[in-house]
Length: 518
Image (tube, rainbow, N blue to C red):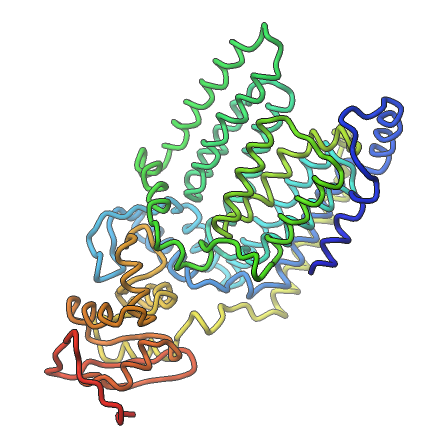
């Protein structure tokens, strides 16, 4: 992996230090070369097609997340009842408690795609969103950077995002995020105000995914940069226009079935504290085991030292913010991958050469008709060959079938099994809706199932009058229940194990452990 990153960055390193003020002669040579190389208007199309094909071929990898199950289930419920959820209906521990789904529109789209085409539907929908995201990113960058530099950014972005390209709402929101933030950055680059045409984008984003709050947060720093670098006589008017746009954007974010609650609900995830560290995608970056994110940060640091890259102060703040977000929670690698290049494109283009902002005067209908036919044909062929389906590790199908025979209502389940239980209509103890269960419940469950605090397991079994457990076969809690008095193993496979509570068994903080029990 390290060698790949070195090759990607080699074109940057070979040129030596970047002067703060390049000679004019160098710029007159670089720009025409960039324009000649660019083939304007085509590169985003080919990048989008390539990414789409890769996503389709990866197919089932896009379904490798237990949350996909409950996202589709909630979407189907919205379609069936023509109403968005306002209370929890899927767990027995929080049933009836207030809960809103800030990603309701994505859930409806996934449910509709699944209902029409089975698992192929969510795969194609996700692949389309990913392809659109990279096409938009390429379009923005290619207007400001030469083709080779644009492709470096695109390839690094793809490497950073691979682990988080899943059939989930955040992916459907990614092209909207790139389009909205790209519009703000374009306004900053020209030292003007953002277009009001961006308001429908952030309204759409607010209905697709709770990450729209990042878009709101970026309005202020991008506006400040635009105002500071504008002519003095224009600054007051520009300030007013950015402020009005910010207010209008806040109002647009409330154009959801939940109104102002959309803004409040999006904050609850950030208040989970210690619980976030227990969820894989919310863990911090680990330089002890470097992956694409860690290598990208190190390569970027090396590039700055080698080439002497300089940026305006506010762009430095923005890039550092994106890096901090990615290092704090690996799921934010997509923010670094997609938004940092938007901020860096113009100043880097002024130093390494610009691409062409021109577009073809009239797109050839034959080309786009051919592309459309090719897409449909390729999709049909690949989908017919690939047998798309979620992985078994998060789909304990046989165990849940056995569990349903007992007609139980209070099951202590593994966190990763929650989405599949919702899918099968079994009330959960806990599931992927972390903002509903809160920090305390998440920490208690994690400590109980991992036996870092065994008393937690016995207390939860007692306090919630648990009738059965459905846990991973290799988990510490499963191994203990194998020997715990009052519990009987009734089913086990490589994925999940079911223990039933015996009639008359007493949940105790100090239960009897039978070491001879098998």
